[in-house]
Image: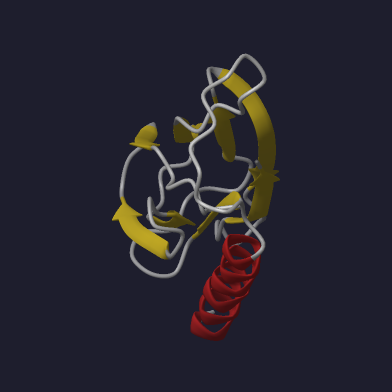
Length: 136
């Protein structure tokens, strides 16, 4: 279980670091064709267990937060050199959910849902929502 979270965290960090390194030149683009950067992460559903949410922070590194109730929302505006954002959720300790409960994770950029993933808890109640990545 802890190995799974550590692996996901490291994978998320590696993907984010790679995409930050491949990001733009740091110039702010504000013209008509500019890509919006205001990002909202959402975790919702009826899952009653504890979750750890891992997401891309403003500077491109990873951040995590332990949550015990849904919904959860975080607003971040990534720096201009951040080439992508990512989000994942997983039970790593604490209360388990109940089989059949669901979790949906969403990345919303510029007011539009750009990535979403939903999972249903298995018989053991342990939730794992794989990482979703969106590139600017």
